[in-house]
Image (tube, rainbow, N blue to C red; front, side, top):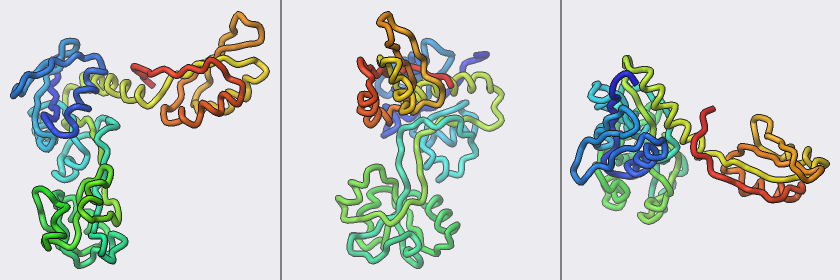
Length: 285
């Protein structure tokens, strides 16, 4: 890298720990900040870290205070920030959903026509409702949005949902999704440090790709090799290696982690043995 890259990380909240873990897994070796420390450095890379609220990251990047940062797509959309999304990070997934009380007759977002809606994402809610041609009164609420219908503040809410347990606890049910969000790496538009950003994006991306895959190894007789390779969910050709035992080969393949549960019984039924699955540390496509 030609010069030190500055990067903003969430100082707290649901994105902090996953962001830190991603940096550690990428091998840049960030220095653990002490309590109330707002800056740190990376030992193995020319990167300076700035710890701020995730809500403030889009503005810091947009204004050139830092070169890049990690934040949520929902925060970028809500602030209408002029930043470039460099990489989707695969954590912090959630969705902006509309919800009403269990007793409410509404079953879809269009049923919110003429309703009063409480949300902590007023810009996003108003924009998406307008795009759908839904006229509603949007009321901004800073926190505890779920309690709004019970207090009579609003007829419905629009809020971020991860599992839906908070909605159910407060007697609410979802009637539709307006926006899907996750953590992203963003950069300032027009940045001159394109090489440094590309390097960072590639390194972080290699960890994200690796997490989504497993390295699969197994033995199989040559007469059943075609059966095994036919069920492997791989884009490319697996590696096949002759073993000392006549008529037996070792098969190595990279497969999606999400397929392992259903794949192992199929492989066993095809005659595969000594099946191993290993985590992958880095993967550059």
